[in-house]
Image 1 (cartoon, rainbow, N blue to C red):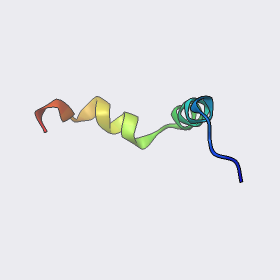
Image 2: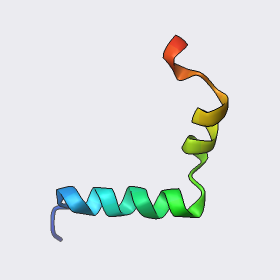
Image 3: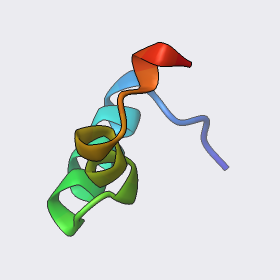
Image 4: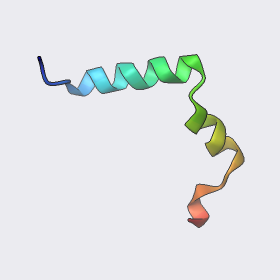
Length: 35
């Protein structure tokens, strides 16, 4: 089993974003800076 590299994480986040990441939807609605 290989250790994930730096670009593997970027690819995973891009794929999640393309699928409709729930955290991105929440961040558009909730201002997390107040926390």
